[in-house]
Image 1 (tube, rainbow, N blue to C red):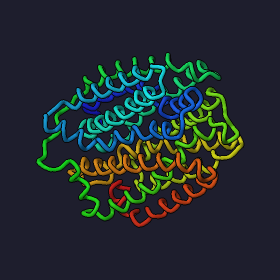
Image 2: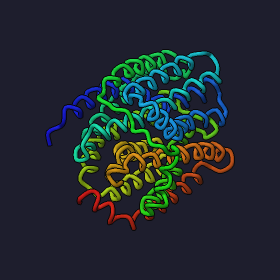
Image 3: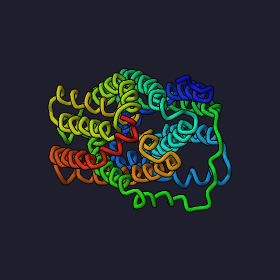
Image 4: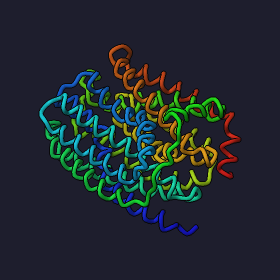
Amino acid sequence: MTPSPTLLATARCERVRALATGPLDALASSLMSVVAIQHFAAGRAWQAALFIAPNIGYLLTPLTLEWLARRRASLAHAYGVLLWAAAAGLVLALASSLTLYVVGVGGALMATSLASTIGLALWRSNADDAVRGSWFGRVVRLQVIANLGAALLFATWMHDDAGRYRPLLAVLALGLVVAGFVVRRIPDHALPAEPRHPLASLAWLWRDRGFAWVNLSWTIMGFANFILVNLRTNWVSDAQHGLAYTPASALILITVVTQLSRIATIALWGRIFDRVNFISVRMAINVLFMAGGLLFFTGSPALQAAGSVCVGCAMGGADIVWNLWVTRYAPPDRATDYMTVHLILTGGRGVLAQILAFWLIGQIAVPTVTLACALAVAIATLMLIPEYGRGRRQAGA
């Protein structure tokens, strides 16, 4: 299928944006926690606040999109402004204060999660269903390459001193500024203003019982996975677990190994998404996340590395599925409504999971939490079996 000029223009801008903002993923995945724990000696509440921030961004998505629609605002321009707001947050985080660090970094992550949902709206309107997964996968692959390169450089720069983070935040802020200018050139449109409450899309949870069932499964899996993935940095960085790896070692184990696996599989997942039953793809990703959690929360560096490989492979698929699944599963005229529901539920479970995760650290042994979360992921995966037929029809498999 010959790509349209609109798709080509979108892909060009998004490739540059991915290279400029990809390094920010290294901050979100591990660097921010390493600095908070080892430089600021932050307590669990501060650590949880950092992980909660991007999920608040997802919760704010319906209100933000409604506000933009009522003002007939350019999506591309809003995309750029949010990336600039994220850059401002990182500049604020340069101050020598734990409070300003958490507010600045948290604000940056909240702004970028909001920006990502606007980027998805542009992809939905500018790319055809038949090729969206593969083209989007190419952009994600570039973003992961940038993330991987940044993680290696960050690990080399910081070595065993978490206090050397400020130049890294400055570089990340500069990338966000550049990206903000680039995305404003994406072909775009204003969202249609609809005279209804921005949360009205939640009605589809009882209008479409199959959609609700998939979201229930996804919520159970996502809740457990949020806990497992975001406890990884605490597990290898906090001395209370007997590990206390150096900042460089933690970045390599959590970010570099994970991103190498992620980048190796993204292109494959993109092709799979375009051709294979969505439910099968979702189940396979769940199993990889479950295996990664079971392997990582051990005392063996080799098993931890194997766990990071599994998580990286799962993230390669999740990059595609999380962003594009409603285009495969929802009725064509309801993709935006279904995505709104998906984002609200993602944000809600993300906020609750972070609060629970850091409370559990002081109450229950992490290996016990790991087993409970793995069981939850297994149950969520089995719950998808009744929806297999719908996933086959929508994929055309």
